[in-house]
Image (cartoon, rainbow, N blue to C red):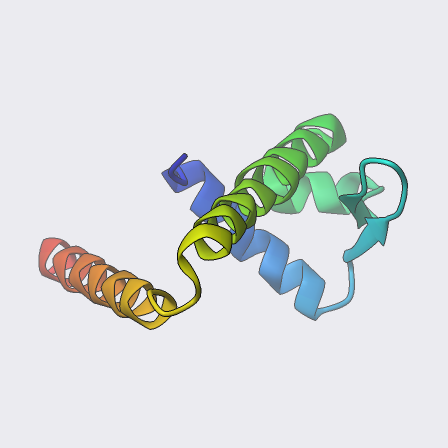
Length: 110
């Protein structure tokens, strides 16, 4: 699953609030452990994101507990079957794709 533009904007806002320690991310242990967004109360947080607290929680859960964790499940499965020797090549491909996107966005903006 790919990240949407709204997902990327959400992550940028989340990062700023996380760095300022206005929000925290915690691991909740249990039969099905998951990541939880904490300190997401108050109108100020809703105003920062431009959505309701429920919307913030939903997008966080989708990004961190579905997309992010699922990506590592896929990596775990591939590396369990083929070893870790392909990891450096996969990372090189990702870095190349990111650079290509940055150049494309830069050329569109100018």
